[in-house]
Image 1 (cartoon, rainbow, N blue to C red):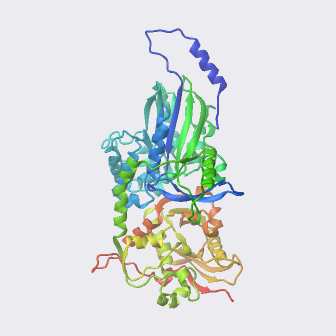
Image 2: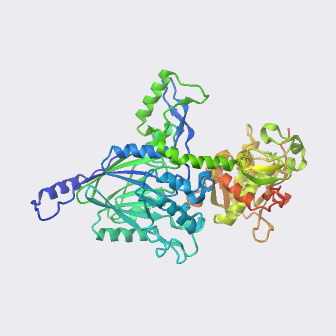
Image 3: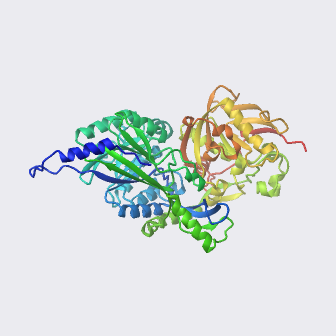
Length: 632
């Protein structure tokens, strides 16, 4: 993973030998070995969690083990350790610090927990991502106030945002809050860092204030690069939250860029062996080498998602600021304690073999949680624990859970009461709580996240019913406990029908399971489980959001689908969605349970308790309008 320019090195050496010493002029800058430490898209993922990992434990086959991963305190520790080992270091965050877990909305206002944890690292620069605008310009201003209140001097960058005249972040009101670029000196060399924010996605799917706009990324970046170079800045880093594929396209159109540190696409970069360790399939090498518009080399990096990777990019520049070489490691952060999937401990020999395999990987990095950062996080964790006991809704009649309509259901699949399972409605149309989840995605996406025509929730993704009484936040989270994020997708009517057929086939094929059964908002149909694949759903209709009228599904029309990341990526057998081109997919980035909370908060309030009332939906809104079960 190294690129070098022998000719550049030779030219640099010749230049060094071609000048006599002159004590009246300052010494010429020497070459620079620069270490760039970076993360992106941590999305309020601040606590550690567990993951599976595949390691050699000395047996005939590799073993699936469990280990702790991520946690922002682990990011802090890794950056401190690596920084201590290198002379010239930049610490960069490439955007989307906020939105995605309860730490954002429920542990403090406007990303208070994220700001506090970022200030345990002291990033040199931070590029604005699209989700930084999820609470409008005022929410972003509040977040930046929190960031600036800490001990760090993190420069916030975006060259292509123009804040509206009435925005609290307009330069006349918040001078210096967001800069197009900044210059940092390391080892006698000036380094220019230019920020970019993905334009179209932020404008249409986040919530910037009216009047706040986003310029074309290439135009804005080139203007800023030209300005920096005119000031004698020869090393240029574009810190862009625009996505890995777009990084490569933009880099090819820019003159003067040397390094691109990216975010937005959550791309895992690194060796192919990442897959064999069970980490994931890399989208490309770390670093990825490209050429800029002048034909000079550019190295491109990104650090996956959710604080799981700290990227370490080692870049060598000559005295003229020309790139000589570019190497690096995507450090996958894990804990040091390994366990077997069944909960048993490893033997001493197994642990020794596994630890040796970790070292041999070259990218797995056992890292402790930084104690000081953990102490900063603890009050926010306590707030979430308190929030979980908060009453958020009133349920007046049981909201039954049933994965698949037809028959009495079972406790294992429905977890509903005997009375609930005996109701004819639940056998005809399926689970009430599953349908509410689908309706929540539809309505919240329609009102807040760029619009939606239809939505999808697979039956097994909704885990519990809600019984009559006051509902706590913890109980609501149990409904959608997997921590998936909301996506929107542009799909054709033909793809919408295929999506429904995918879910039905996963249930009714030989050896099928109940979990994938499709619940849709704004889309309804009749089901005959005895028909062949592709013909089980009929009479598909889409609800006109303006008039409320139900209209036949137009197979040639494009619809906007609101769906969780799990199904959007093909989970539960939804291959049609998996195969939708990624340029038609938008990661809204909002946690499934937060969508449910927003939906609950939009419901009418009970006068006696002051709580929103969560009710069954009208029969016409259920996706399964009639159901013929499989003949036995």
